[in-house]
Image: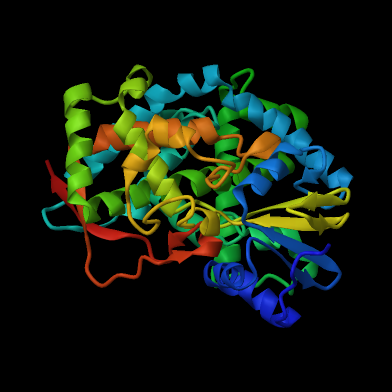
Length: 428
């Protein structure tokens, strides 16, 4: 039996998926239920919102794959095999000092601002995580890079990341369904920004070659790809890292500013555990509430609104047929806000992430990093980085949000606010 099919026309489906998916998909789920189909040209898309069904899709990695054809899938997996080597537990642990140091530098930058200065919190978190990316994933010393290129301005790099549509800003619809959609239209300045970003990554690559480090991501890229491809790949990785990191930690500051009781409880844990010093990897087991805060941030603001998989063979989900060579779409934005799985889904409640509550969850209603063998390679990296940044910084500062700003998420911008997050710093 085929899943219920939407009756709206193809053009409306395209517009809904590309321009306003955060409203379109929830409205269709409400109308058609947890499993239904959409069609664009010859491609059938089955939307799945049942957590048990989602779990079975993620577990069936032999059938449900990232790419439409097997040659593209193998190319993707080959690239990921080199990247995943950088995210072993040992490697990630080795990055923690860099993460804490970057957070400390961010505190110093923020504290140096004149009193009552407006700050773009989103931009500052982007600057912070860019420094981490350079020193960890790119294995390049910041001091070496700035010595080689004294004119380099990392704030300019951050601004270019915001402008470059196809680098910063996951667009999973175009990534998965590009052949079915009208040509992608970048925003003004996007192509110029991407050109400058490629120049930036070329500088990083040049500095790395002067001081190469074995068994690193850049070592893998340099030794397995022509320079141009290595630069392109390194830029994609830069964008992907920011997709996961920047919206999450920025939204954490926003949500804490809006929930003073939670901010106080977080401060209490940090005071008793850290006593004002930067957090380290050894502190992570004792930062339980901090971790719960970040889990809840990712529930409310997952960095992407959905994931897609191509079904190689015919399958059955909840008694509905998933055709061969069709797409399944699973939306974090829908599932994370489903009251059947999360009571008071619009509320910021870190306490819902106690061990007992997690064990009571059935299926997969929560998947900010996706799940299964094709989940985000940097999940552990992102979780550790966010916790270390928040716990180090929140001991010394907090923010108040500027009034009357639009903080609504933009799907093509990783659910980040289109114009950043403006606020004022409060020194503790």
